Amino acid sequence: MGDVFASAPFIVGKSEPPPIETDIPAEEALCPVISHDWVNEEYKHLVVAASPKALTVRPGQFFNLLCPSPDAGELWLRRPQSVYRIDDAGGRIEFLYKCVGRGTRGLATLKAGDRLNIVGPLGVGFHLDPSWRNIVVLGRGVGLATLAPISQLAAGCGVGVTAILSARNRDFIMADDLFGEVGTVVPVLDSDRSSDVENVERILLGLIAAKRADAFFTCGSNRLMQLMKRLARQHGIPGQVAMEQVMACGLGPCYVCVRTFEVNGRKELRRVCIEGPVFDLQEAVGW
Ligand SMILES: Cc1cc2nc3c(=O)[nH]c(=O)nc-3n(C[C@H](O)[C@H](O)[C@H](O)COP(=O)(O)OP(=O)(O)OC[C@H]3O[C@@H](n4cnc5c(N)ncnc54)[C@H](O)[C@@H]3O)c2cc1C
Ligand code: FES
Image (cartoon, rainbow, N blue to C red; front, side, top):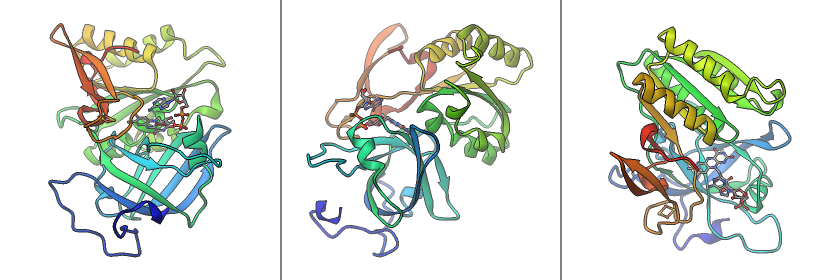
């Protein structure tokens, strides 16, 4: 993996970290893999040693990972993955990802001791307003990985969280341990139909009535985002959504990641990698 560098690579734990230049938000680094385990039949949890710059990552930001090829062919382009947990004290960052295609299947082959080439931190993360006392997080699928570090943000600000975690069945509820440390976890499942939009709407209305919904956060499901957007508009609740889009450069110049947004009644094109991935919920358009 070291061969891809034109100049001497920065290897976390081996070479001197480059100085943190605050005007350059991201860096490329080789990070030793600490552990890499399956959490269920589709998702892996990856822990790597991180550079001081990588540890400045904010919840909602992401890294662009150079995944090894899973086969004899070449693998083009990096793959974006949100940070799942930031372990400042341990000098580590964590990812939780679903194996869906060649990139993530290649990523899944990395073993403890191997090195992962990452670029980041990238993009705009989540924001907590100091006046909020209780927030609601609603996510599904890979969205649970992206939302997970809100638990750390909330803990740091003493904000209460209700995390409504949607999944096919119990095996695919993830980040419940992280949210359980700071608030209330409400799993909703396809297997018992508690994930139906009507039921999630009932739960959200109950939280609004109990004044436990100062702000909404969502990721990973178009129908759940549309529900939160409608309720947020009706009840005057601020909201943020982390959007996904296929990416190439991850840095702004290629425009591969453009999505349509609606701002003051006008359609606007924005790049998810640099103007997001976290956007105002009311400006996001479904997919
Ligand atoms: C900002 C951002 C953060 C992300 N964070 C996470 C995360 O924390 N955990 C996680 O599991 N996944 C995350 N993703 C999605 C992840 O990037 C894709 O799953 C991955 O790039 C797929 O690569 P692949 O080569 O394995 O699959 P490919 O062979 O490229 O594609 C396989 C399937 O995945 C879909 N796919 C490809 N890229 C994306 C994408 N960017 N978003 C959604 N679907 C995609 C394709 O349409 C196709 O159906 C994130 C995406 C973005 C943009
Ligand atoms: S991925 Fe290149 S501009 Fe967003």
